[in-house]
Image (tube, helix red, strand yellow):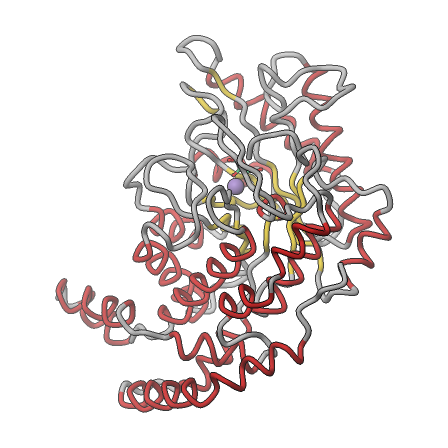
Length: 430
Ligand code: LRH
Ligand code: MN
């Protein structure tokens, strides 16, 4: 699409804001120096942070009630990648794209791979889809997929996942994420133990042929689309399964997949301690799997999750390498704006977690000084690190003010002209 946001435009807009940024950055730097913290090191950490964008997040997600298409929605995977390029150009922390198959099934994997590479982008985790029936699909997933009572349906679902692995190899991906909606709506509908055994057997078929150097992520979810029992319903069941599968199988934590008020940062600490934290689908929610923008509802929870992650990083936990991915559904905002600001909220929580004085915190914990222990976290959470985030973007060639620049670029309006609305991509509601 011939109206890219070029580097010159970004530099020009940054020049207008640099003086103020340097002022704020200098002031914060002096404050942090008093706390024994080097702002330059923190800015390097911020610039090095990476989170992948979900291809299915570039369009309007919709709900089961309605789908209100936005202007200039991407009509195919190539237009999704063009929009991912805009996000990456402006925030510089999102070079990875997580694809969903068959929604993003390319005619030519090689063409898709070079299209992304030409824009400095790569493909992160593949995602299979056995929660919808595709046209011409012989057997339905109405009553499940990898845990279905019919071995032929399980075979079909396993085969689809193997197809995702083969495609992922051609695209340069290095991990595969399996989420299934399998479960029941009524007591008695599903035999709870046998269903899990069938699910695990099917995963063994997938794990057996996992390509060299790849990781397999399984994603638990409390409910929906099943509303009484879900086969992979919680982190404990997930942990059991990844232990059973082997050393390259890990649990993926989607923040929206837990009952209200569940202590997700504690689940994260457990999976880190057990060496089975594979990665995240970051989003936020007030009630159910709302897939809202990260940090928009519970920013303190997001900070506490990154507090566990940075604590593990600084403790040099062996093989600690969680994959960070966004998984959001945008219904009332411009998806590009939501993805940029959400990526920013993750870097904010990550940088703030580095402000925790872990030596002093340990003293308070050992000394059972509950209040000072909490205060040492709150001091970090209440520190405005925006100058660090903006300076990191600026030094990485991104925008000091991504939202301002994106809006003034007219990218969305021009996309609306270049992409007349067509039949909706990926017929499912996500
Ligand atoms: C399920 C889920 C899963 C995806 C889908 C798009 O709720 O979080 O990660 O495959 O959303
Ligand atoms: Mn998810």
